[in-house]
Image 1 (cartoon, helix red, strand yellow):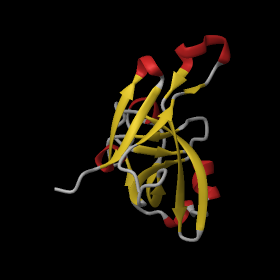
Image 2 (cartoon, rainbow, N blue to C red):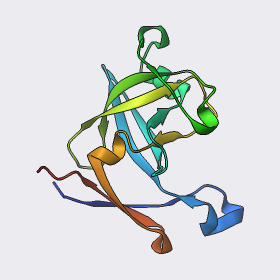
Image 3 (cartoon, rainbow, N blue to C red):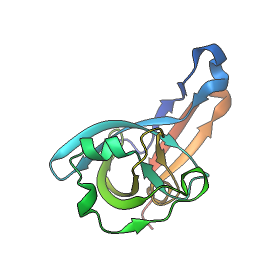
Image 4 (cartoon, rainbow, N blue to C red):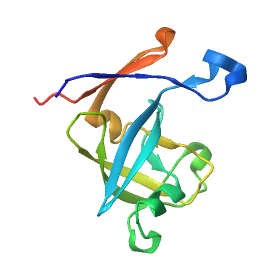
Amino acid sequence: MTDMERFPFSEKDESFGAASSLPYLPLTFTYRNHSLLVSGLLDTGASVNVLPYDMGIQLGADWKRQKMPVRLTGNLALLEARVLIVLAKVGQFAPVRLALAWTQANNIPLILGQVNFFLEFDVCFFRSQSVFEIRPKQSQ
């Protein structure tokens, strides 16, 4: 297993070129016996990981069974959200548990934020090269 993997930024609007490139990370979520290949926006300004409603449904989660509420802020402050814990596999790294704020919104990207994506992984952005590197946190 490698200790670091490099990923390219993803261009979201060809008409804007490199200016629309964002750090989207491919990863696989597993919840119970359902797995889903997803792409999450690495957002160092986001306090929490945020999962769009449809992705939770595709993972087999049941909104009514998720009882722990999460309070979102900013543009998502008016939306209800509930905690969903999934197993996340990034590249060749060992899977980690991620806590997600599963919201009823679908018009948002999967957001990977401080709690707890950036607590599990170290990320280095090379914006001028349109790449980023990911490493699992180091045991202390």
